[in-house]
Structure formats: C-alpha cells, structure tokens
Amino acid sequence: MKIIFICTKSITFNTFLKSQANFFSRRGLKVEVACSDIENLEFKNKIKHRIDFPLRVTDFFKIKKYIKIFFQIKKIKKKIVQQYFIFIHQ
Image 1 (cartoon, rainbow, N blue to C red):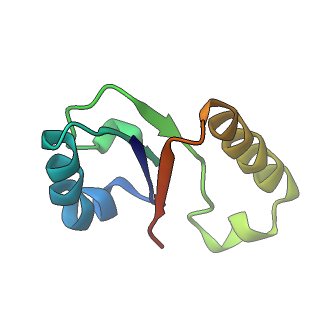
Image 2 (cartoon, rainbow, N blue to C red; image 1 turned 60 degrees about the horizontal axis):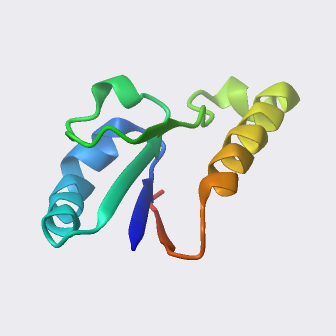
C-alpha cells in the first residue's frame, strides 16, 4: 500500500506529519508527499509532488492558478492506483 500526504506548505509536513510518514515508511509502506514547496521538505523519500496551492490572498482570485492546480492534482491522480491512501492536511 502507498500513502500520499498532501499539505499546502512543507512546514506543516515537517512539523506535524513527518513522524507519521517515517512510521509508515518503517512499516514497509511507500510514502509520497505533495505540497507547494517540495524543496524545503525534510523527508528522505524521493517521491515528491508539487502542487501550487494559493498562498496569498490575491491568489484566491486568479482563475489561471486554479486551472494549474487542477491539472497538477489530475496528474497525481493518474498515477494513483486503488492501493493508495490519501491523507490531506489543511
């Protein structure tokens, strides 16, 4: 089974979810992470996905930004098989 952690920022993953990801990884599960700033992730797994979530108030009004996010999520969804469990943190 594989698990994808989806967060808006890497600090959320590094602070709250990294220990869970390491636990699942030690148990033999494949762990992937998706967030807006993957270069700041403190996780040794090679499988990381970038999703450009809106970070500023002005980003919430940009239609092009939402279309880009939609296609990024669609790209990740194509890779997902029924063996995946998705954990979304807001």
